[in-house]
Image 1 (spheres, helix red, strand yellow):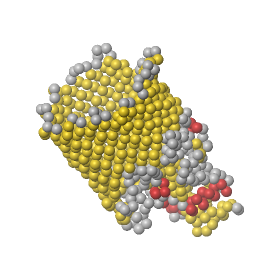
Image 2: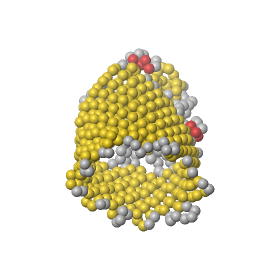
Image 3: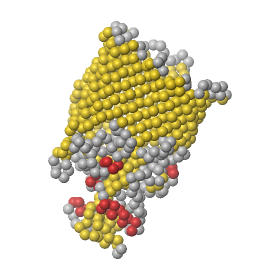
Image 4: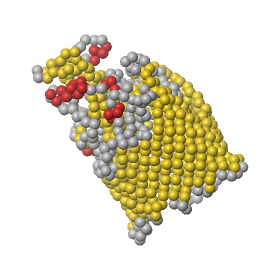
Length: 602
């Protein structure tokens, strides 16, 4: 049995228990069971709720059970069940920027007897938030792997899995609570009269999700050898997914007034709001079938060649009832290939070259009014080396790669009076050049350093979008950004292990990670605050001190003290530019945290 107990910042607690039966008699059966309970208060202070309901709080219960059969015969079985229920509160998103007319409108809230709005690009020490949470995620899965030796050099493998997900979300994304404003009847948008409704609660953007998804996959592999130099894999794959979503959204759409509006004898506003409630309900199904094969052969001493083919057929369907009804179906087919040539320079160094094509099926975005998007295709080229030097004290791997990307699929968030809107478009062409280097070195006895760096030079060669004002196509390739991915990443770690003592062994480790600037939207053309809410560069330091190999009675004990983000860097998890709604929000990652782990093995 193995037991892990942890305690840390924000009242973090974790208990993980694993029981392994070993082989049950001479049956060939083994079983393992793991239970995890993990909880933490939120790391952003919402003044309106207790700590356990602050943004970033969570409470997780998870189990994993597995049974394996292997009795030195031709048949081997491995079954795994997992279940995870996570109850949490969404990350705090704070209002970062807004158009002047929107600021004037929401700033009137305090004069109308309610809350004063909060707006800041920098992290706020405390916030007042409406209905942030709860979020509930339930995930469960079954997986069965069966292997049957048909001959000494031929094996049939079956991999069957089923997964199910249930999710519910309540989240207010404007970073404020208890705002009020002067509103008029939404009938105005249907061509009706300007009908004042007086002062009412408002929200710049509030959403709810009710989502369900289940999927199952079946894969068959035939693995074998041809002589002593050649190995092959033949396979077939099937995937079936069904997803349902209901997405009620509430927002206050703010419009300028032709003349000042006297709301009270002492308060006048130059804008008015329209409270809009909308919903989106749809069912999405995806099926994918594939046949593939790969063969690897040693064509000469130290020289090997690997080639593979994969044919994929995808079927997509969208059944939508709200906000409008539609029934869409598409099918896609693609043959992809890959070739790798590797050469062993000696027993500790190998070089390789690889060319491969990739494909991502097209489909539908229920938040978009169009009839879907097309597949995207990628051709990649890679040269690399994997090596060890100085009697295995230095491991060095490096790769240089280039990729040509066609019909790139890009998601664009275009929230408007219709609610939580978005679209997925085929942006055009993109090109990537990059280099990756990683190393691990034993500098002196007990002192190890490891690190990696990734450098990426990329650009869009074409990126056409439709101008919502002129309805003309515009190429924004020169200003377009790549979403949620930096151009530069780096990691450096240092670990020192003191020599073993009678009372155990002490290990100290420090890790530094870096990423360059990240963007959350493709361009300022549709999202004018995209540059303002981008984030980076960011450097972060983590550390861990471990006392291991302690023996207390029958137990083997390990104690560790750890800290994350030790310099307390403020950096973002994400940002949202709400486009035509005229404002943006940002969500910050965890500040400095610490914890203590106690692990006992029996």
